[in-house]
Length: 516
Image (cartoon, rainbow, N blue to C red):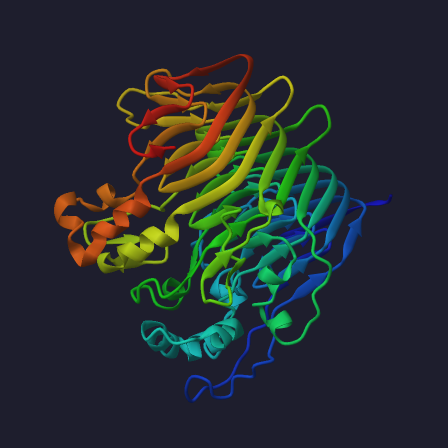
C-alpha cells in the first residue's frame, strides 16, 4: 500500500478537497415555473475506494475522504489505510454561513471536516454573486415557507438540503486533530447531516434516486481502527465534534421563524477503537465524547423516522431494523474542560436568549410563538445506543477547575455529560472505570452528569415561567423539554468510581427527568 500527502490552506481530502453542489442561476416568475424537476446540481460519489496511507493537512476543512461536503452525497464509499487528518487553523477573511470574518476555523474529520447545506448557504457564502438563485428567490422562499407550500425542488436547486453519508466503511488506523474547534472520527461538524444506511428509506427521497437512479447494495456504516480525536478548542467526538439541526426558514430569512427543520440523523453505525488499546477523545476546551461532542436537534439509532409508512388501513408504522442501532466499542478515555460524556458531551437545545425569542444555532432571533416547534426541533431522540469501554475500563473526565468568583458547573457522565430535553431509550454503558468532575463545582454520574429541563426557564428573563407557558399553547411544549431515560443502565469494571461535588452511580445532579 503506497502513501501520499495532501496539503491545502482550505479543503484538503484524501479523495476530494470539497464535494459541493453547483450554483443555479436564473430568473423565476413564480413557484413551479422554469424549475427543471430533473436538475441535480449536487455531487454524488458512490462505490468509490481510497486504499492508501494518507496524511491530510489543511488550515481548515480537512478530511480523510473529503475536506468538506456541501449538499452532497457519499454512498457506499470505502477508506482503507493509515489515515492522519490535521487542520491547523486559519483566520477567515470573509463571513461564511456559520463563522464571522476574523474568527479561526480548523475543522477536521476522519471522513470529512464538515457536512453542511448548499455551498452558497454556508461554506461558500462569500463566493455567492448578487445574481445567484438564492438571492433571486429570497422573498419567494419566505412567502412559500410562511404559506407552508411544498418548495422541495426549489430548495434543492439553491442548495438548502442536507448532505448524506450512507454506507461508509473506514478500516485501518485513524488519527484526527484540529488546532481549534471541531474534530470528529467521521465528521468534524454536521448541519442536518444524514449518516445512515444506504437503503431506499434514506435515499429514495433525494433527487438522484427520486428521478431514476438505481439504488446500490444497502450497507451500514463501520469505522474500525479509530485511534484518537483531538481538538485544541471545543467539540471533539469519536463520531462528530458537533451535530445540529439546520433550519430552512432561518437561512432564508432571520425573522421568518423556523420554516422547516432539517434534523440530523446518526444510525446504523459501529465505531471500533484500535485493537487492544481502544480510542481516546480529547478537547482542550469544552464538549468531548466518544460519540458526539455536542448534539442539537436530531435522531440517533433506532429513533430514526426514515422507516415510517402507512399500512393498507392507513395506520402509521415504523418498522426500524435492529441494524439501525449505534455501537461504540473499545472506548479508552474522554476528556474535556467541561461537558465530557461517553456518548454525548452535551445534548439538547441551543442557547436561548431574551424573554420573547431565541437564537437557534446563530440563525437569528425567532419569536416566542415558535417555541413549540423549537422544542420539537432541537430535542434529541436516541434509541438503541451502546457504549463499551476497553477491558481495563473507560475514563470520562471534565478537567475544569473552580476558580474564585467563577460559577461554572463542570459536568461529566458515562453516557451524556449534560442532558437537556434528551429522550433516551435502550441505552447502555459497559466497562466504565471512572467519571470525574470538579470537587467544588462539579457534577458527575455513571450515566448522566446533569439532567435538566432544557431551555424554557432560560427564556423567562422578564416573564415568569407560569405566564410563559400560557403563550400560544406553549404548555404542550414542556413535555418535549423534560429529559426521559427508558431502559438505560451502566456497568462498571471492578473498582469503578464516580467523583465530583455532586456524584452518583447513575446521575450526578438530577434536576429534571424521568427514569423508567
